Amino acid sequence: LRFPPLPIDVESACRQGIFLVGWGRNAFHATISDGHRIRFDPGCMKPLDRQARGVATYLEKSATQALEFHWNQPELSLIIDNHATLHGRGHVVDPQRRRLARIYLEVDSD
Image (tube, rainbow, N blue to C red; front, side, top):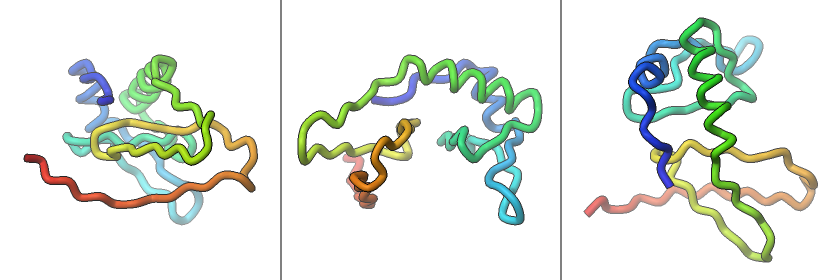
């Protein structure tokens, strides 16, 4: 599933609004879009200006319409195209049982 197209004013604000990313000495300023992709993590990105606050509010409201995946069967896998889908995850209830694997797959676009 792809994230629906953004309204033009939100798309523009994604390329112009400034966020503080991270904490402490490693923190840096960034926009959340390069014009092709959006990268947003409310856990480590703080909006610093009006445009960034508007984008954060829009994305937080959009999250209420997200498709939720349930881990209700053993051996389930979820594959996400990070370049095409804005995604997130909820609170981890039992960190000892959580297993997260990241695999890079290159797929021909033909």
